[in-house]
Amino acid sequence: MLATRRDLSQTFQHKIEGHLAMLLFSLIVAGSFSFGKTIANDIDPVVLTALRFVLASLILAVVLMLSGRMHFAHHRQPWRYGILGGLFLLYFVLMFEALKTASPVSIAAIFTMMPLAAAMLDRWVFRRHTAWLVWTALLIGAAGALWVVFDGSWAAFVTLSIGYGEVLFFIGTMLHAIYAVLLPRLRRGEPVYATTLGVSTAAALMLVVFFWPRIAATNWSEVATYVWLVLFYLAVMATLGTFSLITVASSRLPSAKVTAYTYLTPFWVVVLESVLGNGLPMAWVLYGGVPIAAALFLLFVER
Image (tube, rainbow, N blue to C red; front, side):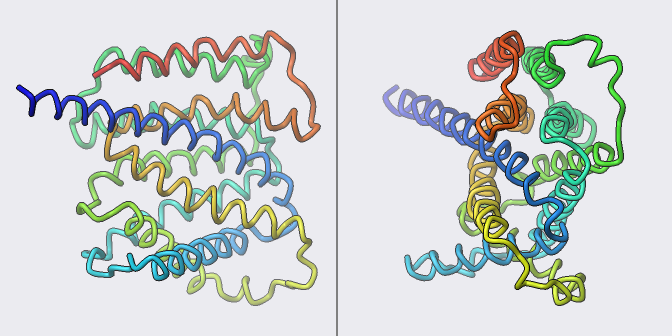
């Protein structure tokens, strides 16, 4: 009996850790949209993505070596990292290309399609059952996210026109959903830091090998200081941070629950855009946070 209670307590703790990881994940992703928009036209998106993965890999490798946790024995079947790294690098390249013409808010709107995409992939490809309560929560969360994105205006929703940037990011979002679904199935029990290093290194190598001419042609002396600052945020927080957080969460929660936290991203984007001086939303726009909170509560209590 005592062992059973201990197991239940540990399971509950793991679920809480998974939910907290994705809460932070949603905020960091929102920051990558808002901050990424500020440098989208200042540097080649392929070069930017290559730099963030190279920098992220180097930083993590140094930290692991200094802490004595650089265990390459964990990296069995390295082809797994090629698949995951390829999906993630394509997502980021498409995101920064999209941000050249699309706004952070519209990008966040498209990003909310990922939970349903992940849930459907789980259902169709892996035959994984998703409870009706989870589907209900996904739909409620989507409604709240769309309310925030379209300023609570039905007219704005029905007249939505999809531009080139939005189409690119839609493709990227579907790749991200595939990544989220495949991640727990391609892990072999290695530590989170091992998976993070493997994926980021694979992505960095592929970008450097295939796009070296574009990287070499970049005039580094003209790269502004604020670009490097945003790059550091993207490498440390939006790369290493999100890698680690989604890896922790995917080992504790179903794919649908993991990706459901993307519904918070539009809300965070609106807040960040306001802080950056890009305009304050009207009060009723923030009412979209109510169904988002309700959806996340349903996902939290659903077993």
